[in-house]
Amino acid sequence: MIRRKSILSFLIVLCYQSAVINAQVPERPNVIIIITDDQGYGDLGYTGNPHVKTPNIDNFAKESVRFTNFYVSPVCAPTRASLMTGRYSLRTGIRDTYNGGAIMAASEVTIAEMLKQADYKTGIFGKWHLGDNYPSRPMDQGFDESLIHLSGGMGQVGDFTTYFKGDRSYFDPVLWHNGTQEAYEGYCSDIFADKAIEFIEENHQRPFFCYLSFNAPHTPLQVPDSYYQRYKAIDPSSGFDGDSRPFVEMNEQDKEDARKVYAMVSNIDDHIGKLMLKLDELNISDNTLVVFMTDNGPQQVRYIAGMRGRKGSVYRGGVRVPFYLRYPSKYKGNRDIETTTAHIDLLPTLSEICNVKPPANRNIDGKNLVPLLNAKKVDWENRPLFFYWTRRYPELYHNMAIQKGPFKLVGQTDYNAAISEFELFNIEEDPYEEHNMVHQKIDQAVSLKVELDEWYDQLISAPNILHPPRIQIGHENENPIFLNRNDAGGERGIWAQEEIFGKWRVSIAEGTYRITFRFVEPIPKGGIMYLETGPRIHKAGNSLENSEILEMKNIHLPAMHCDLIPFYAVDDKKIFPFWVKMERMDVSNKS
Image (cartoon, rainbow, N blue to C red):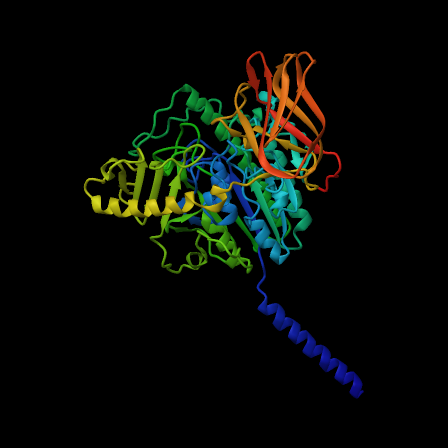
């Protein structure tokens, strides 16, 4: 009897200790980030658009904490780099959307990698745009499940499995599932959303992170006809009688583009409704943190709530986006937070909410938003935000801005411009950036320019800008490897041109390679195929008439860091391949 009582007492104490330990470990929420591509601030019913129908997103916004002054970068890849790392994109190596400038350094720590410290299951569905090759792919940067298209968009040159489908590139695509090409049936947004929901169903009994990154409504503006029919008869420029906000006039092409965009957004809205219903069915809505946001302003002319600028611009129309956060069990919804916030803030915020350590030994530029979510004041309300966008690298004082508190200094000028050539706005009093105050507040402008210079100098000298990431060739984690045009450097603006100088920045593992060159158009016979890898040059004649494909076999390359430069020389032309496939013959693929 005494022994039984001792065992019973021991079990009671053990249960009590276990309860105490469990009580000390906070429950970690599931995390879902939904981001759309080129959907502007005004492409929602909730933000005052009388034409686009977004009942599910509108309802989500009403249930959420709404950050009403939330900012991103003017274009996609920089926004996504900052979102994933909590750092300005230049720190990560991201400096462009193509031209070889959309490859994030493998040393960066993403939200996915951070959450995996706490055993989160992680998945991405849709657009990545931070590197298409090892070691910068999603599966190399913390994602367990990865279903993506390549480069900046489907139908673009970097996404070579959909590019040649033309006006059907969004339908029945070949996508990349965990690093392998796979064919899918249906419309791209349907596929990404359905696979994201499957991922949630499979992993809902443990903490998960789902990054649903729609490529819509980015160009090409392709949408199922059933959605287009909802909008084909509307006039997107109408419905604003008596509205005193500034609006840009729309021509007929702008109106048609808007109809297609609104149709694509309605498709996305339907999927968000399905996803939210699934969370309810699985009984995980209360413990799931869901974010909805977009990556920059609209590419085409349409309603943007009166703001100035569009995608690519540092004016508010290019960088202010909706940001809604819903976490029912933790934060009271249906309220606005007006404090200036940004994409760089999400990683440190999730670090706090999910009780995981943030990345160490690096500058985290973002701020923890938890105090704001708890309706508390913060001491960084007037922190500066830096914006820029030009191709290749930042161009000093051109399309560059710094915002601090209510004031915003904008440079649309030359590197040696006087302060009087800048623009200064008080965006609290002048939210549409119509009234340049630089002459009335010259001291304020000078002060902001000092900070602008400091941020520019710091970011343009970041190690990953001075020493950009290299694609690793011949590694067992990706063999064979495809080098696409999105990641090719060389001349500015490499796209689908034939006669243009291009190269890839690579790190080659020693081995024997079979190399395949695919061209945009069939090439004539009689030319010479060149492959330059640093000081080593291989060339071979071509006797094939009108071939799209050339091959070089048994090319032995030593280990080296170099520029890989291929071209076909014929009839005084030097033709750059559309893509290059490199297969190391003495190593197998582990991906």
